[in-house]
Amino acid sequence: MKSIKEINERIRRGDAVVVRADEMPELFEENPKRAAREVDVVTTGTFGAMCSSGVFLNFGHPDPPIKMQRVWLNEVEAYTGIAAVDAYLGAAQPSEDRGFEYGGGHVIEDLVARKEVNLRATAYGTDCYPRKKVETTLTIDDLNQAIMFNPRNCVQRYNAAINSTDTILHTYMGTLLPNQRNINFAGTGEISPLINDPELETIGVGTRIFLCGAQGIVVGEGTQHSPKTGRSTIATKGNLKEMSTEFLSGATIPGYGVSLFVGIGIPIPILNEKIAERTAIRNEDIKTKILDYGTPKREKPVIKEVTYKELFSGEVYIDDKKVRTSPLSSLKVSFRIMERLKEWIQEGDFFLTEKIRSLPRDVEVRPMRLRKMVPTVGEVMTRDVITANPEDSIEEVSELLVNNEIDQIPIVNEENNLVGIVTSWDITKAVAKHKKKLKEIMTRDVITSRKDEYIDAAARRLEKYKIGSTPVLDDEKKLIGIITVTDIIRRGVKK
Image 1 (cartoon, rainbow, N blue to C red):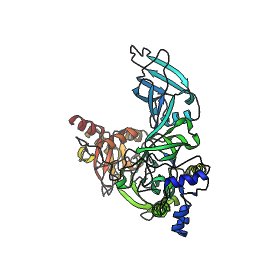
Image 2: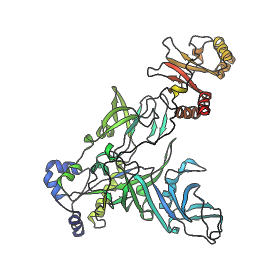
Image 3: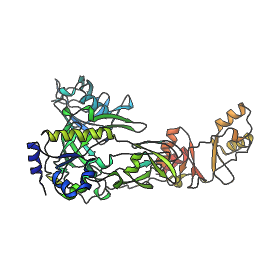
């Protein structure tokens, strides 16, 4: 048994034994008792997109003073409902003029890089704060305070993501190719902070950490903290003025939004053999689930359970098919974090802290309570679908379109499997080019929906691909209906 006080004394004397999390498994396997006795601290690290991050900023008052009602930094809006010249800038807030190309995370990076940032603010004016507008430029050194406060960092265990649909999906887990062609995963496995202290025995309120190149602290459990499901999180705080762009970076997640890559390192004090054993975990011991993000529901189907060793290998087999895997977190930067934290401790620049309160353990994240359920595609779709056969003539299909006052017709084979779709515009082009059969002009890559999806997902799909309807298929790819913009609007009116 050791205490944090004893370990700090060794740090002060310069003889503390500090190892990285990737070094601990071999030391523990060689001699568990010796490793627990001689190793004082294990450093951990992670570097990845952590959307639930941001900064509190105090701009100081201009003359005459202003009570900011709305404020933009490089055209990224920050929240001002705090005080007259205080604001909270969220990492995931997109720019109003550049969209997903630039956002809150990029502004934070620019501030840390000591770049000039444009500030624009408006106000309603009061007797004590008469000014209604202000526009200027500033750097981080012009701010009174710049405090990073991240409501949710360091998710203990991420699920991996795959896409079973026929179309590309842009998600917070990155771009997912259709038909299960790639798997994206996050987290750093055996070196990840909360993986090395799964019982939160040493990590709690007041734990000193490495945060984006500065010393920060854990201020509480993070949002969506769910230790009962192996998904603990932490809320963190640090001085943005002391941070470095080496361990912090604004990011764009294509087709999804903006974020901030955050670097966190947490020292795990080896107080006993049990803690030593937990820090000796290997990637082959860490399991996670591959979820199908082709289902837009909160609870996604589990495709397979895998280990981080498999994920880091670059490929996983799904139904005897080799699928490429890609990490969303940077091991290279995470190793630099562990090494930098190790150096700080060895040089006596970083001391451990006792947690002043444990994080809750007996909690599980809950879904939002809804008073009205969103209808599914199956509840709204048209079931009597007018279809055609690939061998039908252009004239036959033209008659179907005109007589039924519709704009497109799904094309099915004899087993009622969808093989294509044709629109009135396709027919017009076919006549101009003297085509005779549907199979010559039909679109074979069809955008489809599933009956168990919510209509919000179908509406998003229609908007994304700028189409008026999609065929609805069952699990065997057979046509069972069609959902149109009119179907969705009609149900919305009824609600």
